[in-house]
Image (cartoon, rainbow, N blue to C red; front, side, top):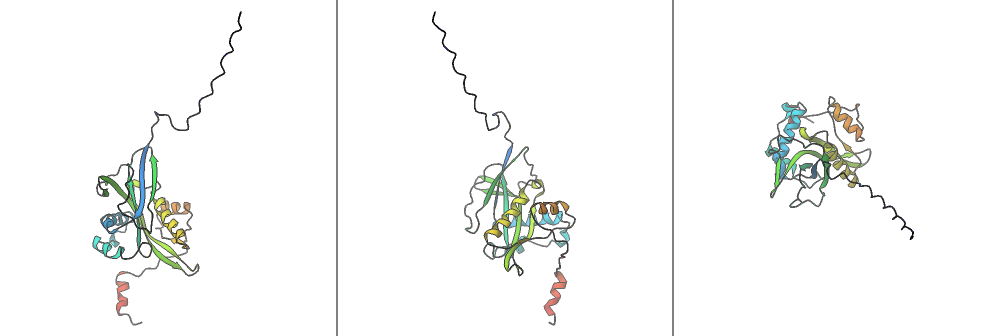
Length: 235
């Protein structure tokens, strides 16, 4: 009687899948881009500044108009004077810019959230690139200053603002990091800004980013009638 054939060797175990199961939810991606602002952004910038004044309880100091912003913000090359980074967001990949400044390459990043973000002001802050629509979610305005102790220029951040529905999701950090990255690229010595003493969430956020809060320093400001009185001052 012939010997039975040996059993076939065991099959190799299948490679474990490194991705989620096909039936697993993939979440809700949000595509973002930081780019340089242009004069066409002034209506959005004006609305963002007003929302910031409301948040900071300083609407009694708000007097900017679209006209005054247009006449003062875009008179110099980027990073040589007042510069604004705009945060754009979209649930679809953001199309390329029609044209961009050689001074700055836009920064793009994709976030993934468990739930979609409800933006009640989406239409008010929408920008169209052909058939594509993106939403402006925030901005940061900064300009050069100088440290005599370091003998180096730096950047002073005048305003950093993210609209309410997009807060606490990493977008403020993305904007401020873009300013710090540009400062390093240009060989600058530091980035500075101020924070309201009651805004404990912002203070904690800045400290987590590595910033030092300097409580021993106070802001001194001449403005309004106090400043105008120097027009006829006998110096």
